[in-house]
Each structure stands twice: as C-alpha cells, then as structure tokens.
Length: 164
Image (cartoon, rainbow, N blue to C red; front, side, top):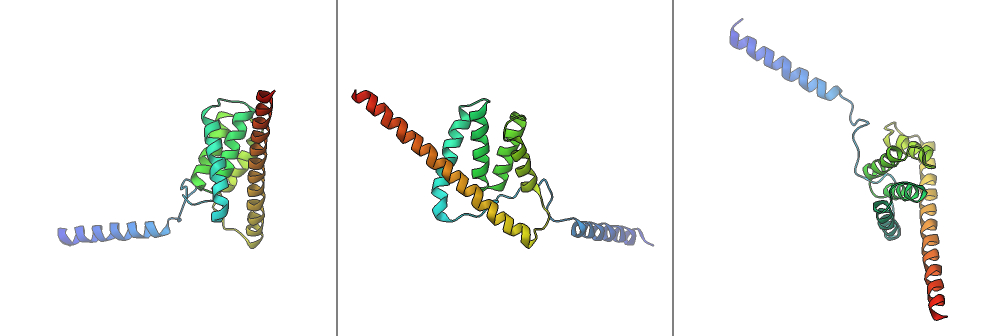
C-alpha cells in the first residue's frame, strides 16, 4: 500500500469515527441550562411578576442573611421559573449555597432536582406540572397583594400620625 493510500484510509477512519461518535452522543446534558421559562406564562400575568422580581432583586441586594433574605431569594427563584429556567437554577443554587440551613432549603433542593431533571415526562406528570404552575403563580400573586396591602396600610398609618 502506498503512503498516500494509507494517509487517506487513516483520515477516512478518523472522520467516520468522529461522525459516529457525534451521532451516538446523547442530546443535551444535565449541565446544559436552557434559557426558556420553566413555566410558560400569559402576557397578562407577566407585569405583576416583573414587579415582584424587581422588589426581590432590591431586597436581595440589601440583605446578607436571615429570614428576610431567605424569603427574597426563594421568592425570586419562584418568579424566575416564569422567566428563565437557568436563572431559576442560579438563584436556587445561590440560596442553597449561601444559606444551607434556611427554612426553604428542602424546597430549594426539590426545585433544583426538578429543574435539572432531563427525564421525559408522562401525561400524569404533565398534569401535575400544570397544577404546580397554577399553585406557584397563585402564591406569588397573593404574596404581592399582601405586600401592596401592607404598604398601603403603613402609608395610611403615617399620614394619620402626621395629621394628629
């Protein structure tokens, strides 16, 4: 066999082997973080969630540790479920790492496992996901309403004190 034939044959084996190796690799991995939302959301629900996200971002910047900080991170992670899956993973990981004994640690670990799960979903689990989405959304919007209500009451109390 000539040297040229040997080089061509070696090159052909390498190219073919490389292509087969690429086709045999599993698509996606547990370290690949999709940039889409974990839960899809309607446009009408987006604005209140953006307001909650902004409030939590502000709280996160001004806290170090403790219950208020834990709640800010956890709530921000929940909101991120509707924005960007990778952001939700990041926030939940930050909470788990920075405050491993937080009251939200078990829930945070559960969310991280769910967000990083690449197993195909059954019809049953899809129905549960729809229910979970509604529950999370309801709780977030309810928290937002309570926060707004507290702010209004606090404002009214201050106005009343100034009028005395």
